[in-house]
Amino acid sequence: MKQTNFEVSLQAELDALREAGLFRSLRTVDSAQGPVISIGGKEYLNFSSNDYLGLANHPRLRAAARAAIESFGVGAGASRLVCGNSRCYDLLEAALAEFKRKEAAIVFSSGYAANVGTICALVGEGDTVIIDKLCHASIIDGCRQSGATLRIYPHKNLKKLEDLLQQARGASKKGVSQASVLVITETVYSMDGDLAPLPEIVELKDRYDAWLMIDEAHAAGIFGRHGRGVAEHFAVEDRVEVTLGTLSKALACVGGYIAGSRTLIDYLRNKARSLIYSTALPPSMCAAGAEAVRLVMSDEARVRREVLWRNVQQMKDGLAKQGISAVTESAILPILVGGEEAALGISQRLFERGMFVSAIRYPTVAKGKARLRVTMTAAHTGDHIERFLENARQAWNASGS
Ligand SMILES: *Cc1c(COP(=O)(O)O)cnc(C)c1O
Image 1 (cartoon, rainbow, N blue to C red):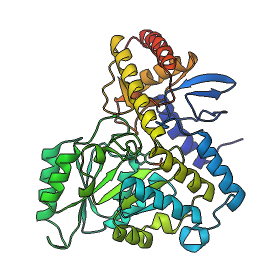
Image 2 (image 1 turned 180 degrees about the vertical axis):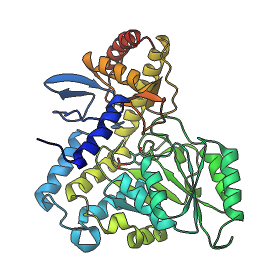
Image 3 (image 1 turned 90 degrees about the horizontal axis):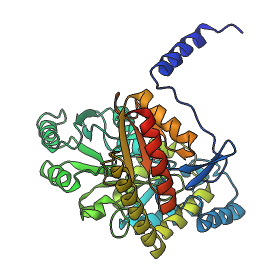
Image 4 (image 1 turned 90 degrees about the vertical axis):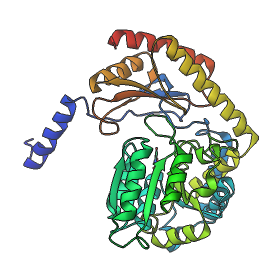
């Protein structure tokens, strides 16, 4: 059939992506998430998921979801402010507030929606929002939509952050007293696996009377003595105005949340458009999420965290022995390759050997900074890791990089 101009134009862009090694496609998984997944009738060791504590297929979470389906059915029916606010939401938000030791918490349908909705609710035209260059797309999209002046500092560059704070305080259109200045940082950088210098950022935002929002997507559940995140790890929780987390990574469900003061949470319930104008999560997901929160606060999770950090160490040491460098402070081990095609090639060779590790490319990371992103979970065994290392050596040797 003849292509219309519309399709010719889209096809040209797709061809350009393919040529640049940037074309994306989906791989269909036929099993539950876990350290071993099934794709196309074959089993693969999975080093790509953010299911850090290995809870995605946990019997307690499955039972909680199943029981809620029996009681509450499947769909939420409407947005939370209309009739979708199931009892399961109240229980989940209470559990999250207790876990994060905050007055209150509010749940969105995803971490993406939580970032966009919250940032747009907190700042607007005339305000300034200051973010790290490597912040997640959902933070950037929220900042752009908000209409606030967006300022970006080079990754973890505190001197530049201070310059931007100074400028924002000096030059705001609303005048010093009214304009809001919001600093946003991830606590674990999702594609680099390093930590934000949180104590220093807290000092700076206090000095310039700014607010701080932290995104603990890759930290909640695994950092800090009680698993509350990097803010707990650095003992600065009480000095952060807005804390975002997700139910989708270590908590192994889906959803995003903000924890903070009761005033903040009341405000977001009234102002966050991604919450108001989107259908509520299904009750079963809230019930599974609440069970995940309880689990993350239990001794079982403490043990799982110990296993996770042991696994990270084993993988890091094993890679280093083969001359493959993965610098990390978290459960994310980025192995820098550089070229998009080269990263795809290594990922493909690993796949042929039964190892599932995605190549991360532009625009998720900068051009020429393509990488393999190996993520570790508590569900990996020592044997899984050894098998990966054995195959990694061969995949890298064949690539010549
Ligand atoms: C994954 C992620 C999000 C989005 O969370 P979802 O629940 O997957 O929508 C937000 N921020 C960061 C830093 C993330 O890595």
